[in-house]
Image (cartoon, rainbow, N blue to C red; front, side, top):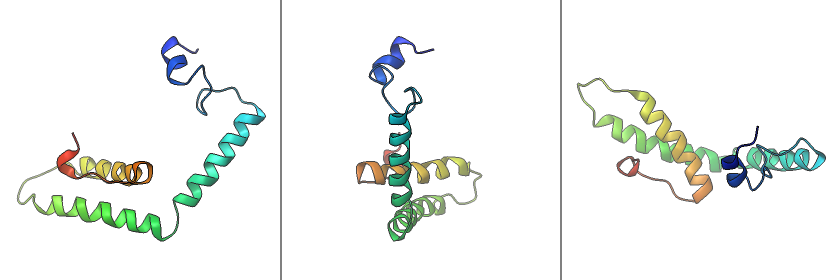
Length: 97
């Protein structure tokens, strides 16, 4: 069921998530999968992961003698890697909110 809100955000169901399963949809899915596969390999990905983890470990090192939730830092690292790919810039933990 496509609600009016979904229709607005997907331009009438024309994005890859809500469109009909047609040859065009298959082509878009194939192209996006190949593009992501190429982006997510090699030294560029390793460098982005390294930069994100340096930031996360530096923040985790500041927590001494107190329990903390590591999921927040893991989510930040993954989000930071994706944001670096999409926007070309990563954020710091201070700007996460």
